[in-house]
Length: 167
Image (cartoon, rainbow, N blue to C red; front, side, top):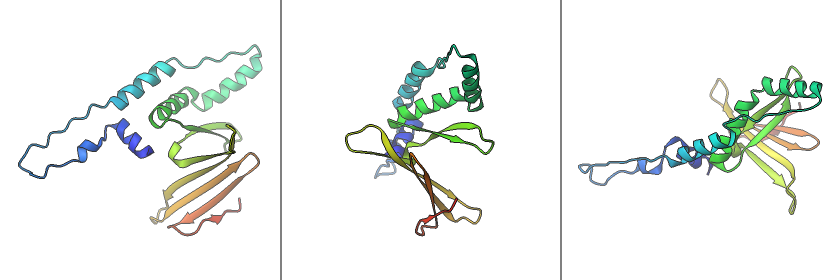
């Protein structure tokens, strides 16, 4: 579903794959990319002016502003708004980097499953998948299971069973 929505945004509409049975007939196609137009217009209207923060506590404001500057917060907000407009929702991950600094990053909606308790809107856990390849061409799948208390990491190589990593 998310790939199809991204394709619409990028102008890769299904009509471009259609062919005529008779190759001698014209096979004219046109794409009016309204998905991109609507998303770009809505995001520009919604977040074209960056969010402005203020606080009476100068030290708190400076600390927050330093975190936002370090993370390119304005660009992050724009990317989150764009992806939410395309896919219907998007996620942002908050973490501590190797320099012990607060970071946040967009998480593609197709790579994360939120788990909710029936009748509640508060997420109870999340499962995130990351697909990649190593230098030898092996397919690597990493799975992270998050809850409020801990994170479990799993790994699979070339479709093998997931193994719990001891980190």
